[in-house]
Length: 558
Image 1 (tube, rainbow, N blue to C red):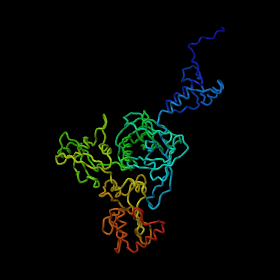
Image 2 (cartoon, rainbow, N blue to C red):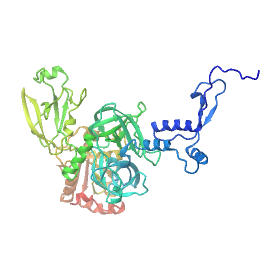
Image 3 (cartoon, rainbow, N blue to C red):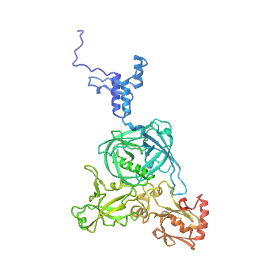
Image 4 (cartoon, rainbow, N blue to C red):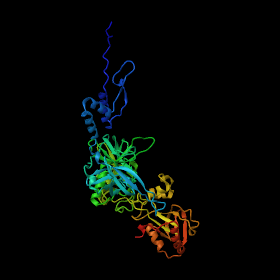
């Protein structure tokens, strides 16, 4: 009668607070090395029970430590927890070399080129490399007036000096003169180019907090990418780790703690998610070695040609190519290229530096991979030579080509210099650049800018290294320019019948003009005619009215 009723099985013993907390900490260390906060866990996850499941509270680390101290004295310690926490912190050995970059920018005002815009601040990431140098993104310190660095765990910001800015590859090199900054920090070591599906960890200081952040993913693609900041195409890595604002300039580590790239941009689109891009080590080392070799950044060279694929068999047959011959056909040659007189349109490039080029313009890269042959060109330095084999008139010829940087008619950057301008009789003349178009028409300038300017930007080639595309950006209204007020962003073709080569030549011709009239031929068959003596006299009054310090920028005075 008094016996207890026999149970079907042994009832599972509820887990103690310490066991549950230990389990939770082991899970946290496997994830982001962050302890879980106090929460409520359904015990049904521990074992199936009948009836209403019992809930077990997990004590916070502070409460658990105090309870152990009450039981065992003041010297109570929990060694397993400390060991796991320390091990979790050391997942990325070079994390202490990652710094936060604070920059104050003062951008030029392209609409009023004699002024600058209101300054603003930004923060990004960077990391310490050998030689007392720090790498970050070029767009992180663009138009900088002050740059400061802060190490992990420090409350001190150190003034930094910008040594070099590589606009094409979106990398900048900094240094700090204060010796205290370099104490106790080991520089980051670079690793080899990762393979597809290799794990990568991106470390930086993105938005959402002030402390260091770690995101992980894998290498999902490797190809020639479009670098948004530099308007160039170089080798790049695509990863599925989150890269947010502030991550720019932070290193990407492999599973051995070696740096395999620099985070620099991400793809934001409603149809995609978690697509980030990393500058790989070949591009980084090219930038560093270029600086060490020349004492300054000289850029990535180009071959100086536009080419066409030769995948159509009839096209290859019409060119006289054999069935075993492959290559790409030259469409146009940059007139500013050093060896523009050597190569000719309709030449077929068969190989570059001994590497055969396929009909689609690719070359062997790694096992099972191919890549655009521009990768081979980008591995060279400005002024280097390369052996190019071409097929011309059923003959195979070899040329030792000198490589140089790209000279665009509409440059992608003004490289930190203030924009040039010249003013006469209220007409503001300036040179067109991509930042100018973006300032005038916004980020969608490729849709909103005048068609004539876009055609020049996308398809025209500079005929000489100092050629510029000039426009009348605006007309500062005055009595002398009545009737011309609506002229905005219109290209200047010639002055008094002479072609205009660049802004400096225009300013020289106008200032030295002794003719009775100043005549400017503009796009769309427009002309501007002003009396010389009246125009020059009115210029000073217009400058005073608009508080403009000078009729021309400083670079035109030299």
